[in-house]
Image (cartoon, rainbow, N blue to C red; front, side, top):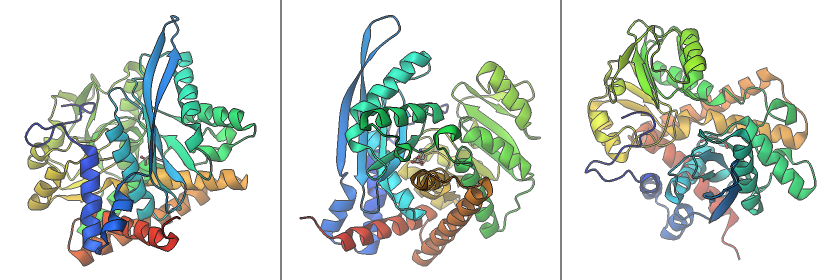
Length: 426
Ligand code: GLU
């Protein structure tokens, strides 16, 4: 299996990310003793918009793509969550990701609800013009849901600052006024924030340091395997190495490489810039599909797509700790295996929340029209992530459950409180 292949469930069933996240929310609701009405309000998505995205391609023919924007829960504030472009995407995936965002924003205690969107398209073969037309038409199609006080998208898988700039411009053109607060992850020149780009990776590293400290494990010298070499995975190779850790294996969609002495971050970055993949990196050995997570290490970081840590992978995982940089990398059955084997997992809703936390700071700056210095962003990010980690750890310890169940309990409790305080309209 490689980073592009979401895996199946235990009996070959396709992994259902929505069932997985709703199961976690239901479990937390049960633990918190929430009444049935409140549970239903929290579990069922507020609104699901499916749109057709017709786009003229460069050769003149017209493609009609499918797109979605989902608001899962907005009781704590405007919807927040990325937009992903991925072939084969469907509404269950988008809804699952939106529900994860509800929990994530609550875990880091930022004033947003959960949303997500995307278009079922593989952007790799698109020209720049085609990509822009897909983005702008999609933004127009879902514009009624967006706005600084309604729903604020950000980059996700296969989208970036350039895509955010087009969305911001499209919404600004429709409304006839500059609307920088409608997206985060924008380029700096149009209201982006210092420190946004690397924020998810910094949060992952901070969670790694925190969990190693709690478990009495040494950071320097610790071996790391990373699945994914994109916006989050690539900076991680540098960041972990700079802490004295040894990144011994890295995998991307095209292949995986292994070097027990540690992979040189600059060399790998240079190789990927030249060839487009980690495969064939000369200072490491190629390894086969499915081998990465079997390598003996202290830390495994899934930083690609959902559903890759199956029960079978979990059974043979060579790492002692998993820090989830991707959204939804672990299937529910794998969590039971990790619990039995004593593998500690720092869950996605905490571990990768640095990105959305930096998004919150960017949104605040766009609303204020006043950029913050990079060190202020970094300090506030560190503070938010530290508090979220400690609160999750304490909750899990108090309940005697995994960090994932502790984090979801914390998040669902905050969402439930907001929902209860606001009351039921009308
Ligand atoms: N796409 C990122 C995530 O899944 C960031 C979302 C955001 O900043 O709104 O958390």
